[in-house]
Image 1 (tube, one colour):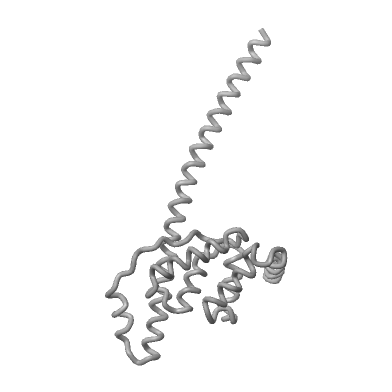
Image 2 (image 1 turned 135 degrees about the horizontal axis):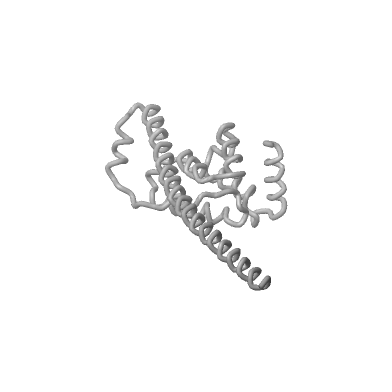
Length: 181
């Protein structure tokens, strides 16, 4: 009789565990859907920020040149839509692909990203984690790499791309992180 009672309680415990695991799976699925929706929302916001940065740049240029009709003229011609590249957290294996995807966006939307500042600002909106920390520092300090997109791309590649300089780049990134913590 004792063996049957143990089997029954094991079976009941097993059923309870299955039900709990199922509920956890449902909860994880729900959270994954919420994260995907949030990611899409962030991508949309990133595009809006990049567009606003471009508008600010255009207005600065128009005010500096004395004519305010230039930004309105640019809006009359539509450019093809381009998806924003995925957010980048400093992963040394995906730096080059991020920059390549950004180059495609710049090609498709040449008027929107006509200035060096607009291109740099767009890439900065895609950074997260350690990469964002670096981006904030160079942007706020107007580091030399923020003067041209080429210099910015070279600096970013040197710091984050594992294939750029191997362990040397990883060491530099580690030192940069240590300075800010």
